[in-house]
Length: 386
Image (cartoon, rainbow, N blue to C red; front, side):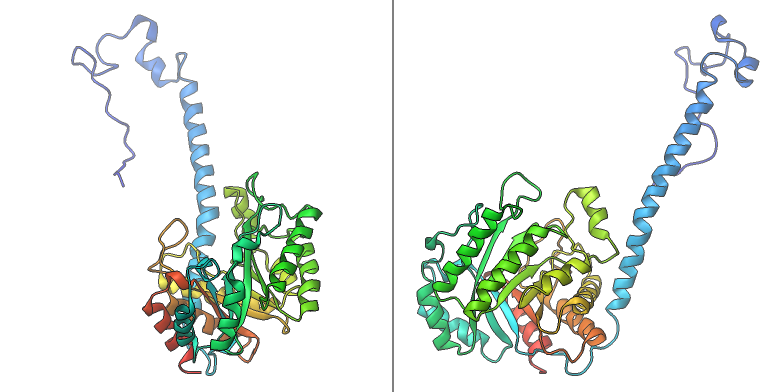
């Protein structure tokens, strides 16, 4: 920061070496007394201009404080939220899940990979595999070529991991912030997504898991789609599952953020509850949180866990996402968003809100980016002491 004083700046030297304003005055500029008294054509504009600048400065400072003070208070609250000890027994309920990449259904994986996956997942709490079987086309349709190895994969997993469900992970980019993408406000598009769901269930998948982004809070087309999808999955006796956006960390924060950036990112807690009541399983994408430190990230996850628990009905499985990937980009610092911090945050939030809840777990994102350290942290923090 530059040093500043209350003194006026020195006069700029004139070409002849004297100070500007010294020596013989310009006959048209008025006398020195006139300048001191506010005379001359520019004198009235000077004070007015300074007043405008002062007002603009005060407005700018006010805006900074309006944004910065709640943010700093929120970050301090997250740090406090990360303190304390989780309650005894807040470990896996054997309702965990993992997102698996497209390689499992496009021919790149074989029997040996299934055997290795089974060895990895035994003695953990993982019950659901979200296998990427899309993406959906922008009109809601789904080519069968997108999941051509599903009829091999599903029975292979059932043999190697009895009781584990293989759900079709379907998604697409929504046209909520750009002209291209899936348009949920169109009944024909929603009908096509429902038909695509029937299609994957006929191929043998044990459920349908949807990840549609960016999905703005309050979107009525999404709720209408979930109502229609749930009729289909219920008729097949399989779960309807969704990946959910994070919940407002401050009241109406998605509205403020959307106004500033055009990307609301968060859902209101009320809308999260509306979604949770329409599905069998909801997995919060509790990563990409813009938190710079592990303690703040863990406190954020604890807060998200509590907010989600408050509005998720007892009949719905609530899963909190764990970051099994290590990208650094805008909105994400890998050194802060770690599995140990997330697991501790999940346990703290569960302890404070619904420590005895059975329909609860974590969801690991994503298999192809996971490291041994990620798996070790999951086992030690969430599984080993169960």
